[in-house]
Length: 117
Image 1 (cartoon, helix red, strand yellow):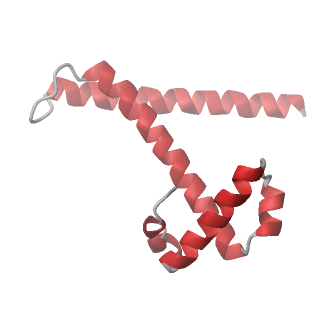
Image 2 (spheres, rainbow, N blue to C red):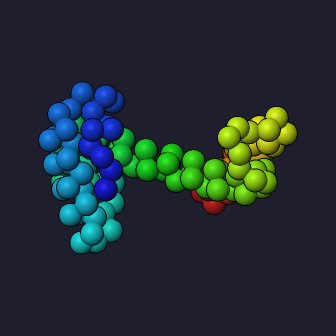
């Protein structure tokens, strides 16, 4: 579960409020798949904001992990005390390709959804 203290600066909520919202979400989520409409009925607007921030942070964290794993394996030969300039260039290019590819995939999915409707 996420650390509620990480969300406090974004919403100004007390850590106990954030923790309570995350616990309620986790409890509801482990019972069954919860749709957005169900969440909106179960949680207060403040809790929804906290939950949305937690979900966004989780997604961002997953993207960062994938990017780091992929590019690290591709670009870093033998870790040292600092990165070589060729490794820095490779990491930058790898990250740029990753985001470009993600953007193209999202555009194609969006276009496919529009074509289906």
